[in-house]
Length: 417
Image 1: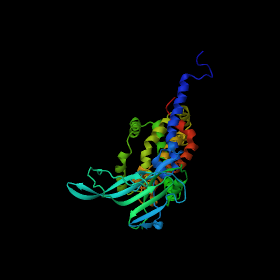
Image 2 (image 1 turned 180 degrees about the horizontal axis):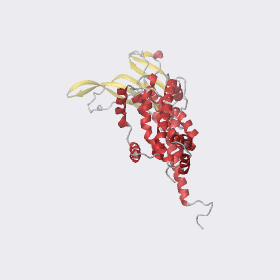
Image 3 (image 1 turned 180 degrees about the vertical axis):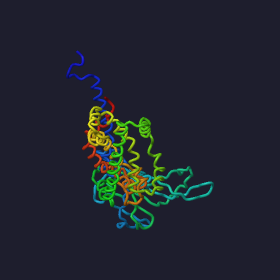
Image 4 (image 1 turned 90 degrees about the horizontal axis):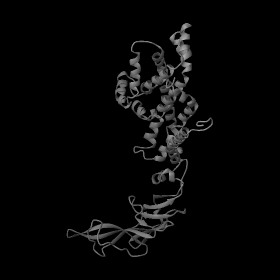
């Protein structure tokens, strides 16, 4: 009574669960990029996207205006609120960026100049201490390097006291004429917005980069299809010496990394006068895409019914007529399948574009524009990077969804009889 109609076998259940698991695994990075593309840069640096709905404890620099500073003896004094009329909560603070949480709220963080003894000689050194606000500072017996401190030698250089609500008192030697830098660790609510997308879409030259990307992608997709279709038909249905060796060469070229050919091909382009140009990148993408195109189309064409082709030849059709009127229309799924792959590859390409296009901004494609102009030399702006990923995949997604029904049919070409 096993395997009754309508009953699912244990193997099918396992298969479905495996497919669901793989889909979820593939979706996690995409969801992470999508969430990060709407987050503020500082919050991305502090917490992962999975914590984006929770408050973020981040270190920020605040520069209160020195306009309200006064004098108290030999020291300048500045008081106010770090949030400038807003609301917030401070958990720690400091005076330098490498230690933004040097002291806790309710404490005074101060720099003192003290006298130390080193190799029997007296010298001055700055120490940093934190102590309860309103109380006298307690100096250690030695510095961080183990040098003894002379008792009672401390001279205040700078101090800062911050309350949890942001109220602060800043004291410095002499008159305070410049806005001080105060670093606070504060809890911020989740911050989502369209600022990353706005920066990308309103960037100077992005429209030209979009046109350049289309200029590269469309010919670099059409040219290899045209060449590969003729070659695939010849390798599938025409008899000539060395045919098997050519098929083996095509298969072998599939495993050659394109990075090995970048410099030799650019050298060849320079010798024949193409150089770094749109024609050069069209030829480069054509060369890199032809092995897969020929292999995919040949596998599909060789699986077409032999009776149809032989009947056409018996009726007097030439190879060109058979190819254009019978084989080519029947091979549309394979053509569409390769077109999707080639379009996605050329649209998202950065390496080949950097090598075969001029370095000027007038020739930048979108990937080069984003990498060189928006991300900077270090590429650390994750919000811009995530938003740029979704902006750049908009057109490939439209192409994929429009032609996805042909993708599987083309990929399975020649796998079964």
